[in-house]
Length: 238
Image (cartoon, rainbow, N blue to C red):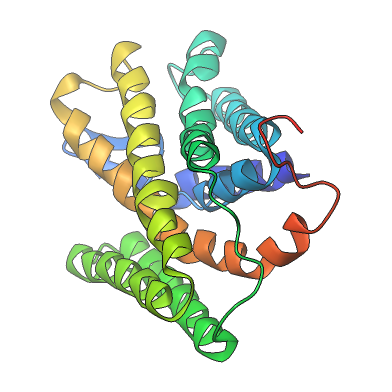
């Protein structure tokens, strides 16, 4: 189910909001990759199984793009390129488990936190609008707001939890995914090396926004239920 939901979000994102460059749109890369918001929480909740859900959702998206005739989406490329979404969850998982970071199950100031999360969702909607309708300056403002709101949440809730989430679960995850994914595209000749930086920053900025907004909201809402359930994976596999 997680894989299917991620696949639908991934396909929608790359079709609705592809990253543009001087060489045209980089098909398969979204400036607001909604599926990324699920990858990191899934990994932290379900270990390697969550990482694999992200990987296979990207494989399915790649197969879809191949089926509609997007050039270059061979099976070999798809299997390698999709590792970007695997590592987007796996690297935070590795760091979290190494640090023995414990998930927060109870909010200190729920009313304030839910208000912040409502604001995060508003920022996500606004950023999608500004991206689709090409308002780059306003899009950058929403990027900054997403970071500020997560920092505000860290100020009113458990600081260690959210000051770990922001650099590791949001920023590091996005950079790792972008480096691997865009690197694979360049290595397979999907994009010219001259536009690597444009596509990379588009990938990373988009992932950061969705993880800081929707990813944070998902963590706040579902963490208490999943962590207390039998399906929660405390290690990597069990």
